[in-house]
Image 1 (cartoon, helix red, strand yellow):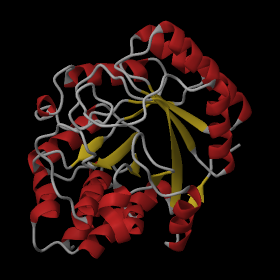
Image 2 (tube, one colour):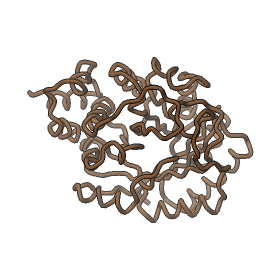
Image 3 (cartoon, one colour):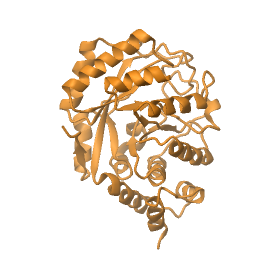
Image 4 (cartoon, one colour):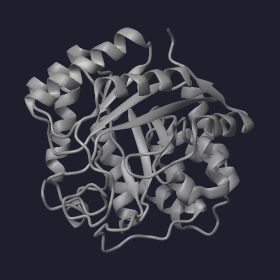
Length: 326
């Protein structure tokens, strides 16, 4: 059995590739990229076949955040000229939801800046979600900061399928990217969302100065919180951020990272997320071999490929756009 077949076998036995396997993938000169991608695809195919889920993000509330996350353009310490606005009008949110559904989106993701939402805003969010769920048979994901049991129950009852709260990096490295809240607070919110009936989306940002050991640790930590959806973002150095250390990422490095997450979290919905256009460049389609979902129409504060362009990339590579069952 060659090394690539061994990775497949280990992964399909509950995602049990070990630290040495991850270090081999990320650092060994013996690794050949195409056989590695083919091995990751074997694992991906078992759970998701050749289907790709398209996600659309709506940055419903932008900027003016109280947190100091050093990677984020919406941070209180970020010095840039991003557009800042309170919660969008209901009509605009619903129009964007219709556009996402009509365009073939599997999931509509609504994101709200801030460490938590007040009662008035949460009531509004839940009311809008309820109307979206009544009109369109697609899944809805919400990211609205830290939760308690009351807020989590309210979101679940409104029809939210999945709650997003990214871990972003390993617990050991978290203090290097944020000082205004702790890693444990993020874990607690994830557990609160799960306890109150929602699936969890939690991912990472690669390229913020983390080590291979940090990468190893975050795979374990995402497994521990049982994230069903894992967006892998690649840090884009937007002007004004205060992150002191960040990597120049190559397409090969990014693809290897996606393979690591597919092997370690074999049945997770793995997403080639923010920064894919910037860092993967002409090799974007290869990310679909380990990843079974992708964003279209941009991210929170950065642009991205259009919906039709994204769908064409998917079908040109021999994959099929997956739609939610009505």
